[in-house]
Length: 139
Image 1 (cartoon, rainbow, N blue to C red):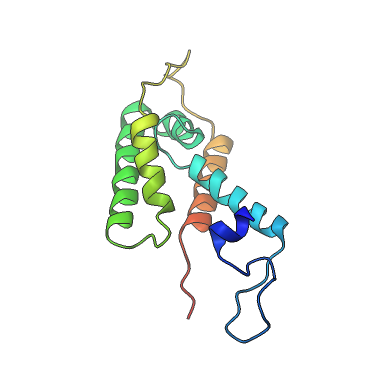
Image 2 (image 1 turned 60 degrees about the vertical axis):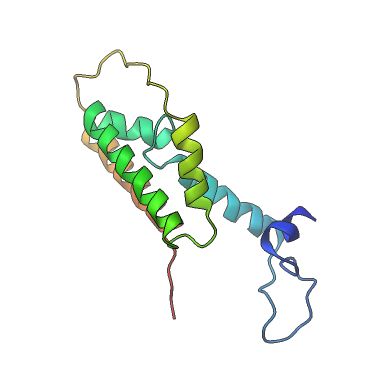
């Protein structure tokens, strides 16, 4: 099916039982993993995504724009120089640079800051994004 086409033959447990076989995963595990990746990409502080709106409210419009450009360059350079083996981050950076760059509608009140509780929640979501997207090479 489509999951085996995307992730390789034998991912759903149809491969022979040998030491070099792919780890067998249930389709719900594959769907859950893809859901985590999609939500983490949506929380990156780029353009008009949820992460971009969070960074605009926490950091302010001008600093959030600088963070957005920095994140885009990081994703593009990671894709070009091999830091992203699957090219998901590179593809998302290209997609968001072309389709997520229209100006944001101004808020009613951009003068007041965000309270401490919401700033902690924003920082926690940034940590979860980093944990979901940065690969760990445990050897």
